[in-house]
Image 1: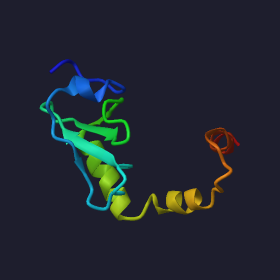
Image 2: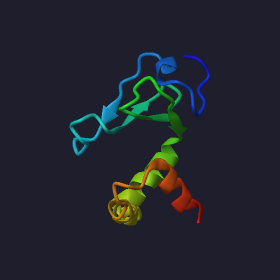
Image 3: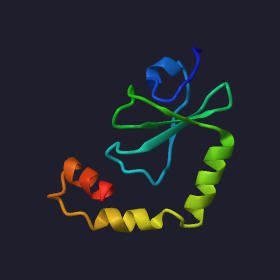
Image 4: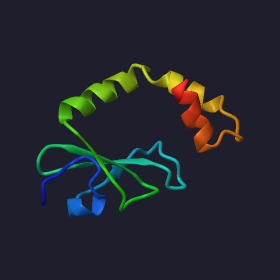
Length: 98
């Protein structure tokens, strides 16, 4: 395997086993994770399986999962559900810059 880095293409990781939650959307809009031989955890968007990946250490993923289990990110779902269909990607970006 080549040197891994954030933003590298998933295909460059070689033969890794991607996993997604059973809670994932059946239309393929999922986050997928793979453990790399280096011990890092790769994350990709299943809608773009050959696209870029983000790499995390085991400690980073452990902290994120603990926060998710404790509900630390639940407000993001509420904020997202309040967006109207007329909010384009540009509208969302503008809203985050305010």
